[in-house]
Length: 250
Ligand code: SAM
Image 1 (tube, helix red, strand yellow):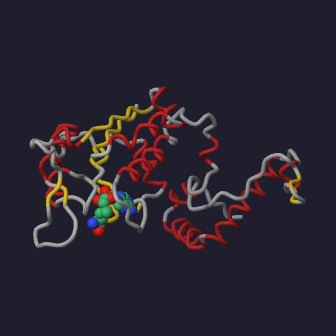
Image 2 (tube, rainbow, N blue to C red):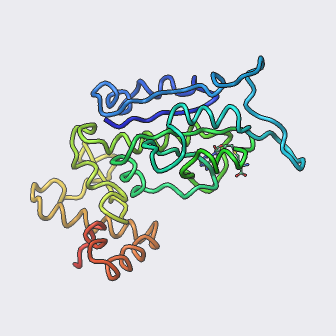
């Protein structure tokens, strides 16, 4: 079971998220244990303060080392080689999240996700207590809670037994490598004059696989051509990488 703790000043944001769909199911199945912790529970003053104005002036507030550092240390342990839990701060300045990172997190140690607000964290919190920063994209939100949910949803669906059919992961965008998934169809066979491609209704699984491969390449080439270049250079540089990309020579 993967343990994920979340440290936030808005624990209420996580309510329905924890109960619903795959995250709710994964918790019920025992694939993941999620703990939500209110940072203000560690605050020592009457106002339960967690932030202060920045040294040097400027707009906004910065999250203070107290109570953040003691809260992280209580939940994850003191930073160092002995600490078992990986402490991740969600931040627009972090390493951009991708599918490979999600897979590594899904099979890695317990996680503590630190959600900050305001202008972010005092640098000393990062130095003293955080292992890594992850960004969900090159834009700025008001807090780390939704980025933490992005991370959790991406991780949980990769945990063994959570998705009914594990094959649905294998064929997804980015999963087999740097390819987008191609077009998909369901019933009815004709809708407003648009037909489902005949091959998908043929029952010929080899032909269907070939059609899907071809269309995954075509769609990737049309929408994200840089991904194909990345996969191709990885395949010439490192044969193991080629296996992971799932790209074939044909
Ligand atoms: N002052 C910070 C900066 O310029 O980099 C931005 C702070 S932002 C208003 C407040 C918090 O929201 C961040 O500290 C982070 O926890 C979260 N956040 C905002 N955008 C994010 C992103 N793209 N990825 C991950 N976390 C994000």
